[in-house]
Length: 348
Image (tube, rainbow, N blue to C red; front, top):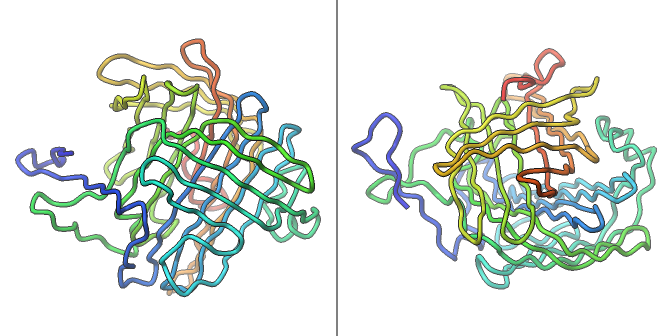
């Protein structure tokens, strides 16, 4: 795929994505190299959902493991760990494993471990308290993911095929792709088994990453069925928010050219409802969302000069409506916390 670079229409950027990119890459020689895969799934009949992420930070000697499960009664099971790793060859650590069966077509996600089971998922605003005061229960996950869409994204390279230079200290990734998917399997929590037959979105990224490289973003992946899905993304940039995404219609993606998101928040600044608008070359879409269950997460890092940086990510299982259809997905809001406040409120 070729696109013109902003500010220089005579130059071109190629976005490269090969089947081999589904497998892990040789790490860049930077401390904060991250290679990660992410999957979500929401079963519309049972109103159960979840997401899974494994981020290999092999140059730092560990992986970031996240498992989050939204149960029909409002409880949330969550686990975050940093298991030790010595290689970037696989995604397999801490009980979470991701296998590529057929690139772009079929992947497997499995987990065998514990989750912190919370009646009030807002407890995770204080992780130490949440893990201390809520039960840790056994959890097993077996899910098969199959692509229902083309691939979206890849690795941007210059016209001659060379990589762009990036500053590792201000990078979120150098390559990223996404795909809408269907998923089937089972989730077992504390002896209770939930069959899963639903839809979701997966992504992969690699390259240097600091969670503080973006001041704020809003990410809305949603599925209304096998042939209708959407992803709306608004990411803050130095020259203004980047508004993008795609709509899946009958097996093909149509690019979103512009988008807005209006959100309602509770007293803690967590999203409760949203109204999104997106425009493609063909038409406009209006989407409403109701957050069914939300868990607040955080990432903190101390800079070499001793400054403590705090990133908050609120992950809400969300029921969406568009064109008279009901779907399910996630509303993921990332904000840097400055003077105790999330910086991106009401800016999307």
